[in-house]
Length: 296
Ligand SMILES: Nc1ncnc2c1ncn2[C@@H]1O[C@H](COP(=O)(O)OP(=O)(O)OP(=O)(O)O)[C@@H](O)[C@H]1O
Image (cartoon, rainbow, N blue to C red; front, top):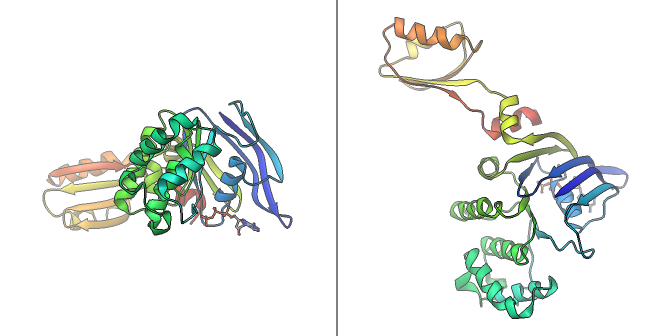
């Protein structure tokens, strides 16, 4: 659906996006991650056609019938709207710009306001909307023309926890029918919806690939052991246990020197008469992998 080669943006000779390569397949959901100033917004703006690249190629497999890339829906980081318009007026305005046939427009706008949870605010002026409501309206205007690629710049940053869950649920549903590229700082949210991850730092891609591959290539190899009776005195001093954290009198989290030490630990525990309630190898989270990649 989208292939990006050596995409670069320079300001005063200084690259803020530096030779970025990226591929997004149909119905793929890709999270763009990175610290402040990494170049995420600049990248998304170039892909949306809002900012001219200094160098590089952006190729879409979809046929564009104009320079406005009608198959893209874009939600900016801080959507700004005419405050005197109502939500319905704004969507109708956007619908006309994106050439939605006028006979379908009102119904489509109503459906979209319902979808993003603004049905009861359709005729209210946007000037009185909260940040979260504006974010939902931004999502509605990005989706109105049924894009094939949805580009979302920090779609959940202005939302409260329940608003965040709503948007994540929408994204899970939307990725069945369109590709999604979104930037976020909320790694836990990214993990819930994305298939692929691109991590940027100072304009350069540090890692990109499938979320599952990322977690596999940066294993944290942490283990959690819970026993029926206290385990603190038993586990402290075991020479194959490192980075030990006693979470409660009966639960500890730790790393082992070697994976084979798992058997040794369990055998030792049984030999000592400990009743094991729970033992698990903790799957590294996206946050663990992010910290490894970014080196912080
Ligand atoms: N118009 C501009 N002129 C000069 N420098 C710019 C301009 N726009 C962005 N930059 C710089 O480009 C770098 C990348 O900015 P960008 O907004 O793309 O980062 P980001 O990863 O989206 O950050 P954040 O997570 O804080 O939103 C920053 O150092 C920023 O100061």
